[in-house]
Image (tube, rainbow, N blue to C red; front, side):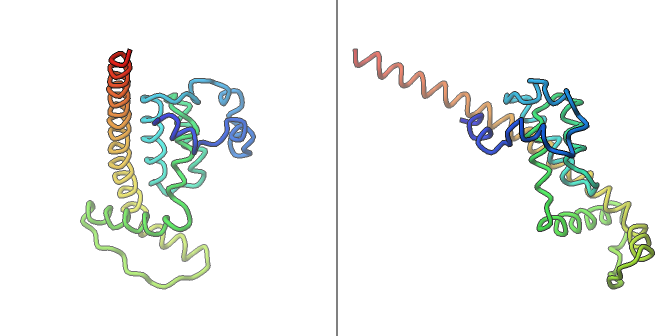
Length: 178
């Protein structure tokens, strides 16, 4: 069931191979191991996808794909999970991780000085917030990545044990009917 549930939401391998931002990976996308759904590959893919989703970098899908290829985990799951950060969730996630970074560094949250569309304003604001933002993002992403890795491994194991017990129960009921 866990495998079928995940497969239902995964993009088609051919669809990912045709993705323009992933074309540079070439024949690496043909490796069957990165498409295989098993407990190890899916748990590692959750780790990669969630970790990268929390880090405010451009081209998160490409970074997740490269990491998935590097550690040989399920590519579609890791790429799909970076969409945790989307235009709706980004401001909330990154402001929260910025505040966590400020707390860890014991620095005050920078007051908001208004919004201005200029390169000078953007570089000045980024210079003020980059360290707490990235520290908080990395640590929060690492925390949730570890939790998801362990959670997927435990869920997968629980599901397999439950399925085995159900099969045993069905076999004993069927053998009693004969």
